[in-house]
Image (cartoon, rainbow, N blue to C red; front, side, top):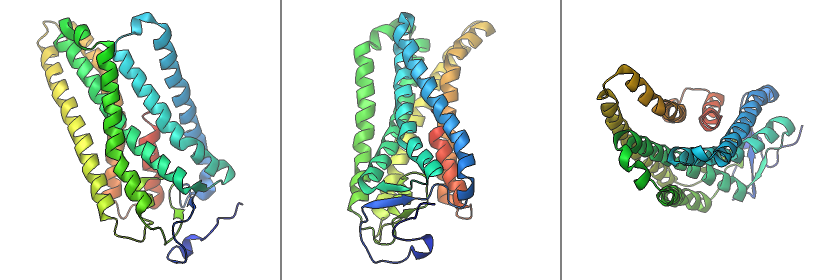
Length: 297
């Protein structure tokens, strides 16, 4: 077994050093003996995510009939999922297989920023896809003239800039806190709350900013998606036949499934983190992992 530098968990209240150059990721605390077995489904999901999303990108590239707004947004989502899963899975598998728990302080903050940034990007892409479905079903004659390639590129850039700028304070705040309690993170990746909780300072600014950004970004995105689908449902049920209802609704089915597969685990993770004080730590970590790994898969 590889020795953990600095401190064991029993020493975590000692304050003999500040701002360590490395953090120690514990993986899934309490389930260390099962790490190898847990790695099997995680590795399987990662392989599926990699192969599946690269297949989507390849098929859209070679098939001219797929060169349209819906498939371009799907490609954006595929790239986002590849970045998300690759930002955490290789290091997590290294912990499970080789007990390689150390992570550089800067690398840890970079991983934390990528996770937050691309989680917000994913939400923005869902809004863009809802807009595409709304235009296609409610205003089909203007769909192709409004959602041109240039407009789609601008939407993608706006979504990326929004997320990148809003998540920068997370990075700056986490970097400026003094870390003098321990360098041990009881998690399998550098989750924001798990990192800043190690700071020996008042971190309410980080907590409040994290909560406000999560509620505003996700809240607004869910609002716009809901409004789009209310209009879509009105348009669908105004069609004359049930076959037309079903055929039109099928064009939205996969989008709705992806949204639910992303938002439901995220909501569950947030609720267990905020209100599940009596829930075992390994359950919190597993839920957080599912939130980041299931949607790409």
